[in-house]
Amino acid sequence: MTATDLPVQVDRGAIGGRIGRALGSLTPTGRASIPLSWAFYDFANTIYSYAVVSYAIGLWAVDRLGPSDGQFWVLFAGAASVLLNAVVSPVLGAMSDRTGGRTRYLLFFTATTVVGSALIGLTDIAALGLVFFAIANFGYQAALIYYDATLPVVARPEARGRVSGMGVAIGYLGTIVIALLILVLDSKASSMTFFLAAGLFALFSVPLFLVVREPPKADAQPFRLRDVAGSWQQLRRTLDDARKVPGLLRFLVGRFFYTDPVNTVIVVMSVFAVQAIGVSQSQANIVLLILTVVAVAASFGWGQLVERIGPKRTLLIVLGTWCVGLVIAGSVLSLPTFLLGGAFLGAGLGGVWTSDRVFMLRLSPPDQVGEFFGLYGIAGKFSAVTGPLLYGSIVSTLLNAGWGSGAYQVGIFSFLILLLIGVFFLRGVPEPPADQWSAQAEAELAGPPPERLAPMSAPIEPR
Image 1 (tube, one colour):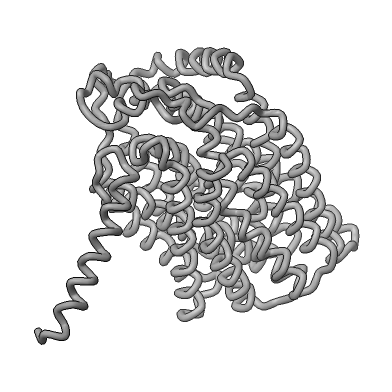
Image 2 (cartoon, helix red, strand yellow):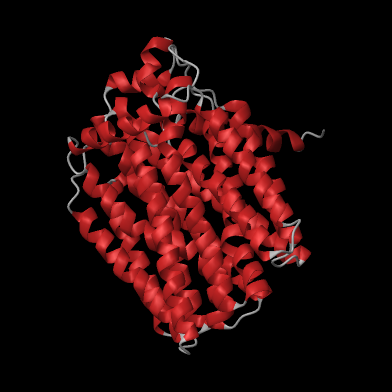
C-alpha cells in the first residue's frame, strides 16, 4: 500500500461509516444490517414479480393457448391463487397469533414460491404449468402480508417512510438484475427464466432470515385445529374494531379500488406490449427494463415525500400520476405513447407501496397493527382477484368479437374508472398526525424487556 492509497481508503471507510450510521439510525436497534436485510427481501420478491408474473407466465401461456385463451387462463390462475389466499388468511392469522414467529411463516411461503416457480420450468403442459403458477403465486401473496407488517420491527416510527421507500427502490433493482439476465441470456419466456427467478428469489431472501430478529412471544402456544373456527370469529371482531378507527374502513375500500388496476397492470404489461403494441418478446423486456429504471429513481423520492407531506397526500399524487399514465397509454397504441404512459405508471408504481403501507401504519393503533394489516392484505388480495378477471374478460370477449387492438384500449380505460373510484374514497379518509404512535409504542419496538413487546407480537395476517 502506497502513501497515496491511504487517504482514499480512509475516505472510503469514512463514507461507509456515515452510511452505516445513517442506516442504523432508521432502526430501533441501531444496526444498519437490519433495514438493509429487510429491504433485500424486496429485491428478492420483485425478481419473482417481474420475471414470472409481469414477463414470462403470460407470454408462456399465450404461446401454448393463443392470445385470447392464454391471457384469460393465466389471469384466472393468478386470481384463483389470490382468492384462495384471502380465504385461508384468517387461519394463517390464528396460527401466527398462537404460535408467534412470523418469519417462520414468511420462510415457508417464500419456499413455496421458489419451488412453484421452478416447477413451471419443468413442464411444457399449459394446464400443469398454470397450476404450478397458482401455487407459486399463492405463496408469494401470503408472504407479502408477513413481510409488509414487519416494517414496525425494523424501522423507527419516524423513519418508516424512508425504510419503506428504500425497500421498494432496492426491490426494483432486483427487477433490473433479472431483466438484464433475461436479455443477456436471451431466455425469453422459457424454462431458464423460471429457474432464474426461483434461484435468485431464494438467494436474496436469505439475509432477512439471518439478520432480522422478532421480539419473542411470551405466551406462544401450539396451533390446534379447533382454533380455525375461532379465527373466523376473530376476523369479525377485527372488523368491529376497525369500525371504531376513523377512516380505516373507508381507506380499505379505497385501497381495494386503487390497487385493482395496479395489481392487474403488473400481470398484463408484457402481453400488452407484445400483442397490442406489436413489439417482440426481447423488445418487451427492454421496454419493461427502461420503465423499471424510472420506478427505481422515483421510489426514493416517494419515501422522502411521505415524510415531508404525509402518506395520504403522497398517495393521492401517486394515483394522479397513474391516471395520467393510463390516459396516455390507452389513447394511442404506439411505442412512443406506451413508453410515455409507462414512464408515469412506472414512476407511480413504487409510490403506491411506499405510501399506502405507511398510511396504514398511521391509521392503525400500535397494539392492533397486526390484525389491521390483515384487513389491509385482504383488500389487496380481493382487488388482485377482481382486476385480472375483469380485464381478462373484457379483452378476451372483445378479441373474440373482432375488436383487435381496440380490446386492449377498453381494458386500459376500465383501469382508469376503478382508479378514480379509489381516489374518491381515499379523499375522505382523515390522516392522523405522525406522532400517533406513542412513546410507549416506540419503546415496545425498540427492544427488551420482552413483556413490553407483547402487543407487537400480534399476528400480521388477516384474523
